[in-house]
Image 1 (cartoon, rainbow, N blue to C red):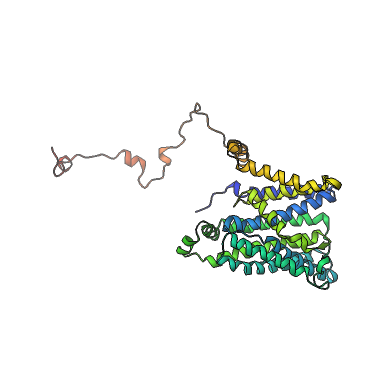
Image 2: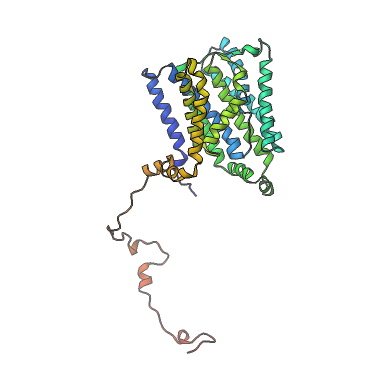
Length: 378
């Protein structure tokens, strides 16, 4: 049986792909400056982090606060590989691909290791373990030697071409969406969400909870590591102070504001929050820099009130992205005053018996047909 094509399943591919093409054209004609390119790089990184964390928090139902730790592993290890390969191979696309693969796989291994406590811990206890993991990773890189990972001063990494890094970032976003959304809509995705709804019921139905928890943590960490490699290419130096618990909470805020278990919501929230942060940092400078966190917090509070206030429920249902899309693709209602003839013809209806034979069949009345049933009356 063929599956029905649904445009809503591909709307995020269309939007991200269209945005990538538009920004590529604008950059080729010289419209985008360095600040806009930097903003697009950060938005792509934030989307990767938010959607990958949403796989753990929204679909698996586990609270993780160590996502910045996975990103830190990818940034340092991927950045180190990139700096070593750039000396012999140059800072080209092949070096970038190898660095992305190594950084992502390193973070995936760490994610599988962290997934082991998730087999027995839940809720606040798992959040504490993952938070401690992030702090341990940060401390290890902070106390490393200058020859390995730079120590307190950080790791010096090669800067990739600004004209193409944000494009690569959005291509990675499309690849990530294809992997995660196909996983969610498959039988494996249904098994993952069943673990979120009731782990006991999932085990009773024969679902391998251990396998799926490790898979989700490893896959989420893999894309967080890739985001870390892109972060290292976006900067000239990687410092572990960036990947503290506040950054993990910031990624979690993107997931919560976008809606738990909503890929599209995570994309929108990550884009808006990143845009808001960078714009506030550029506008509020000098003595006004202390107001950045205040305005940022006020905007987040307003967004939370808008998403959860009961008094605004009717307004949210009437004015949202889903209703806007449904209006665009809404089918035209038929006018009941326009009555059309039935185009079907009897001689075209496929039956085992010809319609002419059925209509011309005679019914003979015999004595057996006139006899009443047993127990009946004549």
